[in-house]
Length: 305
Image (tube, rainbow, N blue to C red; front, side):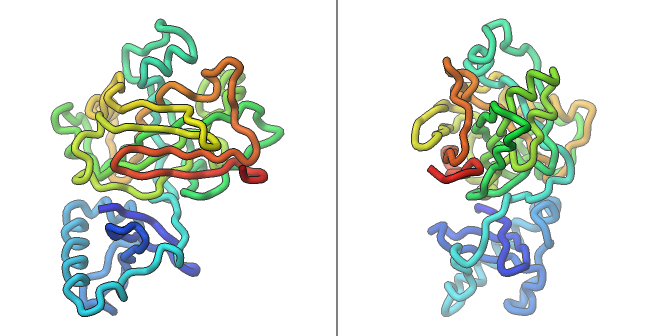
């Protein structure tokens, strides 16, 4: 199951993509008015928080729709809606794991920079934007805008002191995230938050893939291209800290909640890692593809390339 948040006219809905990925089944809070089924929670966070009852409710609706004489009439063409970020407004900052690939740590420093413990920073909720949107270039604020393709984990249920071998039980699903970063601000302020939290610098989507479709989040191909040029190409099996360890460490003394987002780190190949650096420019097309999830596409503000 692939869950989206979409806007149709002036209304926002959670939806379920069909297998062809060209139509979406809107999970209407007022669903009973059309199908006789119970209505759905209004937001993605509320749907996630409903847990297995939400998943079972979706399965029941899909079974009912497919049993109808004209099931296609219950789906909306993807061309008639606007895809938003799956969680358009997170309830708290996005958790981000720094330097979770050894080669990335080395490209920004040396082998001495490979962390021994999980390194975490956050991005403000106001950074989030959806697929196929424009990332502001923030001229006058930064001259070193950079990309970072990442697998993002969506927490599915509340937990604290989560054990390593139970961590994936707390996951709802996975999506793609671009941790766009102002490198000069990062260096100037000697911390990550400002350089990571400019508006629109967290493209996310295009959907959340339910965990039932991902056998192992620690073995997924990931690739980032800029204007068609491959910049990052790796596999999440190269994580220094696998998803289970990240969840366990974060939750050791802090409660994780449904809808929390964890960006798991980026592989080598960021703009700053090249000599000379290859920072983003106006109009650049950024594409991040992760195996079994899909592709997230965004442009930097300016004439598109």
